[in-house]
Image 1 (cartoon, protein in one colour):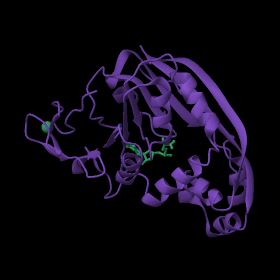
Image 2 (tube, protein in one colour; image 1 turned 90 degrees about the horizontal axis):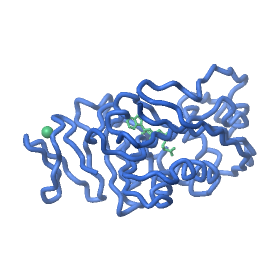
Image 3 (cartoon, rainbow, N blue to C red; image 1 turned 90 degrees about the vertical axis):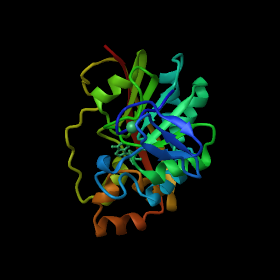
Image 4 (cartoon, protein in one colour; image 1 turned 30 degrees about the horizontal axis):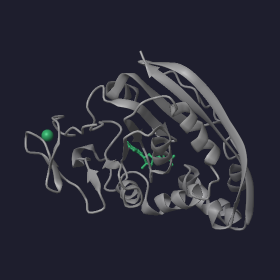
Length: 264
Ligand SMILES: C[S@@+](CC[C@H](N)C(=O)[O-])C[C@H]1O[C@@H](n2cnc3c(N)ncnc32)[C@H](O)[C@@H]1O
Ligand SMILES: [Zn+2]
């Protein structure tokens, strides 16, 4: 799969250690093997996306194997489909690489966090890692076979543009009852907000929606690693953080949905 210039949308070609478009916009390929295609005008903060601490915590938690049932469900959704794969909001690459290996497809992982793609590139060679935004994908029209967004954002118009006509979009969203155990420790009361875990997406038709629900146990540091992967990381109070620190073993339920859409 080609990459396009995030500023003028012309194709990018490799020139030494850079990618360059016909208008002379040039982007360095970092020593670690990822390319930064996030121009300053598309950045909303100096260091957008997940921090290095979050990225490393997520890697440590995911590599414990606690979320293997989610990997299996996403690989099952991708089975029988052809690449190339684009994982938007890929984080440190854990799921993307496993799906790519399972269907034997070429993979591009994209995330707005430079720390995330740096970590992905350092660990997983032989794939392409891009720092960029889901709002302006540096990817040509009609070029992606399997588009994934796992616990990350969905941009229907942009996703529809890059997908091939016979491609699929796999979306994984947390369900209402995801991590109730963790929430009951960190919050004095849990407010259940209405959550649409099977959204209608303009330009797409839902093919299937599969709930994935299982119990897992986290101990010691893995409990704070788990917190770092969630939006609660930003919301937790001092009291909540103290209670979590005192928790040595957490048995909780992971609950998400794997939605598969096709473009119409
Ligand atoms: C909850 S994490 C999920 C990471 C990975 N998909 C996983 O499940 O392990 C959400 C990711 O989306 C990234 N992100 C946030 N805004 C983004 C944007 N506009 N474009 C691309 N990635 C973005 C964050 O940096 C973070 O890595
Ligand atoms: Zn350009």
